[in-house]
Amino acid sequence: MTLEEMEKERVEIVKTSKIYVLFYILLSALFWVLIFYIYISFADFLLGKEIEKPNFVLLGIVSVCYILTYASDRKEFLNKRMHKYYKKNSKFKRLKSEIIDNVLFNIDRNLKYDCNKFLSYNEFIFGELYDSKVRKFTYEYSGEDLIHSIVDGVNITICDINFRSKNYRDKDGIYFQGIFFKADFMKKIKGKIFIIDKEYIKNHPINTINPKKFGERALMDNIEFAKKFDVFTDDQILARYALTPKFMQDFLYLKSIFKCPVSACIKGARIFIYIARGSDSFELDLRRPLNGENSPLLQYETQIKSVLQIVQTLNLNDKLFI
Image (cartoon, rainbow, N blue to C red; front, side, top):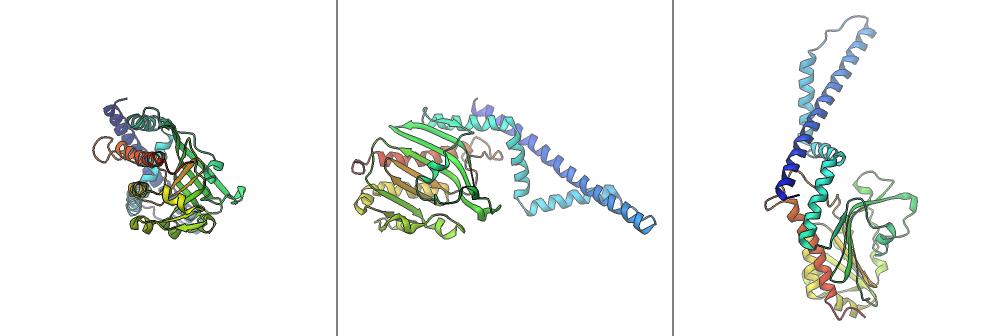
């Protein structure tokens, strides 16, 4: 499917979704008119006399205006309704797959996408940033949008993860929501390095990250990096070999691209990166055109390339591996 065909499909889905939302608003208005009519009729019965009936057409118009006012006061109202429609729309799923496949092909032809798969809970906690002692029946773990391939001899996997407490239904119950990245190198390192985003520790109300268990603090020469991240390790020399000026620069760039907390663990033959966006990371925003400077295609491509750059920097570091 060409870019022009995808854009045409996007416009068609948006048009259909607007009809769906309009139908929802009218149906809601009709519901409240009906409730009011039942209330008036019940009042007639209780009082034993007929109450003057209001103009139901006017009442319907007022109801629609109220719903639209409610929606304008809360911008997410209509967006959530449209997103709910998108999720059920087979054309949307097909378009999303086409777009991500197109982006991946432009980056590396070996990159593959599966909208329904994701990395397991055991792989998620293997990075040790999140407490593996969280009791099994107290959390929900799910995911989607798995991207995988072998790039420059490194087995890489990216997916969207939602890890949350069952005891909270709002954002306070989120342990992690965002992009989870794993890379398997051909060589190993002899220790462990943890890069913890200070923003995440400060702002996350029930975070499961426990910095005290990660070993000694390592001080980095990059002042900007040190402002944003804490580094812990069981091998100070290893940390300095791994976190080269180029690596720290790439990691800062990664945070600037996603504009959210980014933490990582390097151990054995693997690196785990946790990008805590607090939302579905690869969900397609159909309100934005697919062509132009702010297109979702360019956004996806920039984000995925920024993660892969981290892998390339580590892979070229001969002093890091044993």
